[in-house]
Length: 196
Image (cartoon, rainbow, N blue to C red; front, side, top):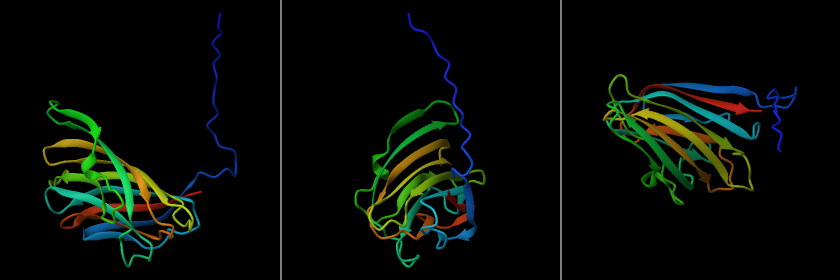
């Protein structure tokens, strides 16, 4: 006869163990073609968190994208390999899906990574999400990223995109750009955090 044992976990980290978030920068869009983070991504932290909050496109049916730079923002063209999957549900409760999002993948491409597609430009539309960037200052390893983005699309549906991959470079990543594939980011905020 087996005996059930109730195992309790203490999720409080000991003092000095790290894990805290440090806000490094906040940028607010105002009819901005791009939002660029050109400082703060360095060897101070091994993990960075980037939040994009209520990004609203100026043009109907826009796609939210990001890319990295290894030269302080002179060029945003780092080679990436990625994978994505998507879940959606419409407001009428008549259509749902969960599946691999092959059209958004990159395979050794320097193009921008799509993280939201077909965003509506209605006043209540937009996109919100976050991503982690790991060890961007390494001169040995590729730079992994992983994230989740939620957006209201043009139909209207709620969509949630899960994306992950790596920047295939041994050069340090030191800048980040987020933009729409067309038009501007009318409104919204991008924040950069270092994780101790």
